[in-house]
Length: 406
Image 1: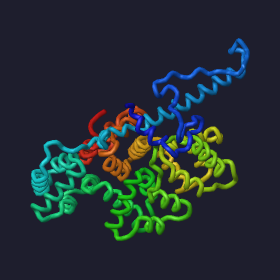
Image 2: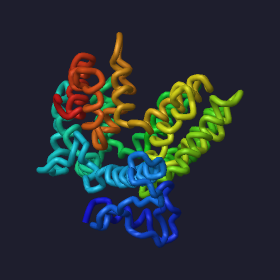
Image 3: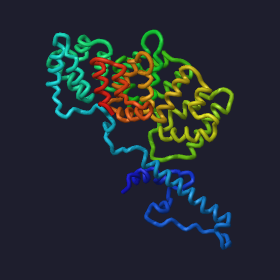
Image 4: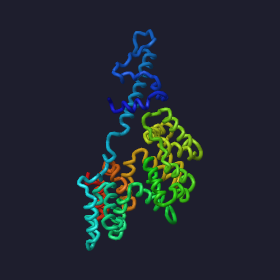
């Protein structure tokens, strides 16, 4: 059976609405040509002997082909929605170490920490070549054998950007995101850049886990901290996204809703005086990613500006920055991170905080795709850029997370 068979049955089963332009839905017959049957001949009530000169025949053929084109697009969309057969680590640069022994790694780390001058190479090579789950096992084994916490021991042994990178690797993904969010809102002022990057780019499942872990770690709700540290429509957007309520059902492409959402985004912004930000927030935080990709394409048929240009015309400040980041994430998340990495290293100086956060948080998720987007857009590899912008054992750690030269 083809890969879209189960999805098609689930998406177009009993009780589902017909897909616009197809007549598919509850009780509908198989699509012509999808059940092995030949496509039907288009007949016309016209008596003309020359179908080529008959407008109604041409219209009938055109309509039928248009309908079949729509069906083909649906099936293509369902097939290409992502290869769900691939394991989560398929695009990771850091994977589980084959010959893993937590006790042996813990002992090697203790020796490296105690070595005069600290053996940073051993620390880097072990912790950047183990999966997150394995690093948790190493920390447990280290505590059991030394009665010391591994993060505390490493914090006293390391310093600077290398310390930040290694301590980040010792946290679970949710702990790492939660700690980055807390740091972004701690003290005077808010690091909106960090807040936006994490909240705009994480999935529902990741956001739900971050919310739980945040409460465990800091004894307060993430939403409560966001509310106290932000204001206005920016606050509303961040709170809506942090709830993780985006529709993740991608089994059906609803063309009527795509058109409706595109029109409503236009009506709520460029078309009117002032912006109905609530409408934008509602659509952009609740619809599925594939749906919104289609909406942004459809939007161009209503607006003289694309969605990013429209945002820049309609809103300013943190709200503009947040909407732009969100749309870029929706359009192509890996390209979004590639752009962020490039921006962190371009020009004079390196914005190490952003560089470290993306390398640590994406190494076991989609770093291979990010590397591919980076090289395609900027002509040189991410590996090359890191080599040029960093040095020492900090560089070694980042290059290991990068997964080698392209």
